[in-house]
Length: 294
Image (cartoon, rainbow, N blue to C red; front, side, top):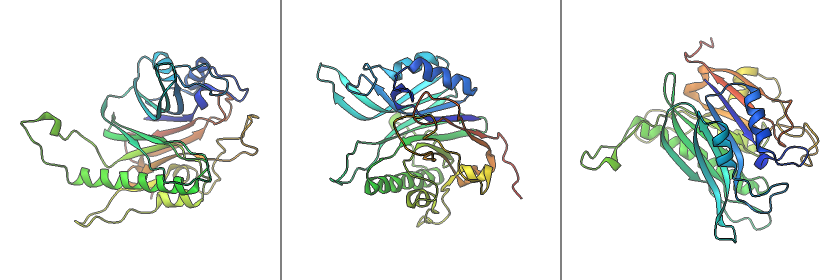
């Protein structure tokens, strides 16, 4: 199973030009993927540099017609002309999609810094071995306070999902809205986390989740990079092609997997060659069968 994550900067390349056809072509050039997770996906949003209020969710869904699109807007505002302006994350899956969740992340007051409402899009997809949760998000850039709160929210989401998977709710047969469709503890989390490897936020996200009061354990988050590359430094995901930001190359785009998926992680790589965004795509491969890491 192959997944791609990419902050596409609303289709704006390092040259400052918005070209969503170029974005789609770069994804196709990277290979075939079962799930594509994109951040900074805008719809009818005025004022974005280089943009012309493109409807990126619709354009990208049309570019990948064999995929089911799942869009989640963190920002949803009037556009001033009777329509809506939206900005968020897009998940495209060519695997069957079950439950979908759009989680608004916390944004505690921190008046010294600019901020935007952030969202985490979650979809349960049918992986070759069974149901799998795939989550994609984009954390706050400026405010450490907000970013740390968002990390804790992602940890809480995983704790809740693990508990529900272990202790599913009762089903009310007379009302199908109380059905309990599959939502496993096993999950992949990807996106632009706006922190670097080894940072406080990076470490906090991977801290083991506390055991629930009723007993048992919870599958917590692990950075997939060292599972493949050991102690080798994370490859940079920004700062490679002369975009106006940043002024150095480093990694802030990650794939995390739950501990119960660690043995399935086979490959993780950064697509360094494309300049179709100020970020680079990141690719993860999971094995259908867990491998022995002894």
